Length: 383
Ligand SMILES: *Cc1c(COP(=O)(O)O)cnc(C)c1O
Image (cartoon, rainbow, N blue to C red; front, top):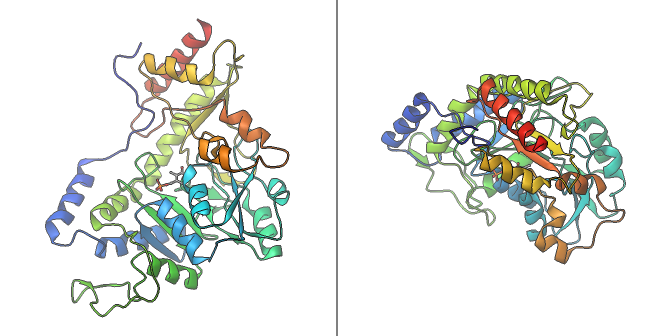
């Protein structure tokens, strides 16, 4: 058994990151300012998008996007139930109706065919979720949206560095990234909204800071112009420079982080290949580059032998941490009690919700750590 606990995720922070944050703290300007502008510029360079807006979280980004698109009562938003709860919570809080769409059983991502079944006269927005580092097959989804004049907002929380058909996620339509500590890069907390729709970006910039008309950090006055006026009521979802500088430093290393994640994921796949009871997610067949945000398996042992929850508990007892991405949103207490089950149900979402488990994966891990996880899984399943 491992002597030291192996967490399922751990951020890669180095001394230079810490020094860069220290420098901002000493600079006299710690909230949104020059480091935000630089981070946004570098994020555009990296993804190829035109405009990027740094935010306090991806959740904040989704809130702003719903507001900016005017989604509200009477509108339907199609989103998978196999996602983090934040999007669905915000759809409900906006007064609109979330319409849950099922996912492919082996990639956990929704498809154009599944979305097609959920369209109605009231549909206004589709929120595809790129999952675990792989991209949704967006081309057919974009076709559906274009044909009906629907908006798309891509949940790219798992997709920093992910490519779809030769282009980075973020390049080809409004996307929201997360820099929460478990994501591929972190700013402590934080998010980025990317788009080349200038009107939408303007609206997001305005709404992220009280609805003030003048966003630009003014280098002369070392701050926001005191003349800025409220153009509409807005929120306060800006990212402090203390965090922006950390995100920027991490972005400079994302290529190495993701390469390391890929090596570790390939080692898992090799070592797990012979085990029938452990099914890793499938890798999509369309052209893409995976960023290996998560290494997800489905435990397909007979439930009388070992439930997923017991499996996670057994790993924990043997000093190995795991994650659960995700418990289906429609099965969470509030949504179970307030929403009718969708017609035909969400069979693939439900099948996975009971069986998925995220194994440890972060750039600081070694192949030996992966071996420890696999050996421990074998020990648990054989005993
Ligand atoms: C992490 C995550 C979010 C939310 O990101 P925050 O920055 O924590 O708000 C949204 N969607 C998915 C799929 C996520 O994994």
